[in-house]
Length: 130
Image (tube, rainbow, N blue to C red; front, side, top):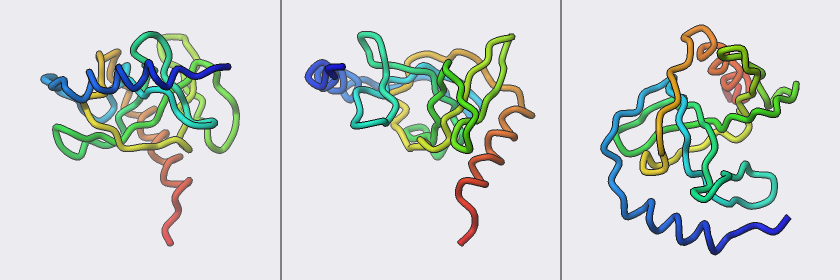
């Protein structure tokens, strides 16, 4: 499949010029413009290259740590299968990353505390203490 790097570059310029005027919090699930990425990194879709993400940690008003979500759950050590409103999806914890809040497009919902805690424990397992 051909990737639209040029289209993403145009969109990325508009996102960078924008101002994020909303509030984002841990446990929030947002649509975020993740763009067109390299290799097997999760790409966004649609004309703004977005996909759902879970905010794992908020550092400040400008940056958050997220994990991409997928509607194609796999049962691996790097995909945490979860269910919300009867819909099964997965948090792709191996693709944990820091993003600018400018990439956040619109909030979808706030995740249940128990489910969020489970995902965070899986992330901790992925990065054991050295």
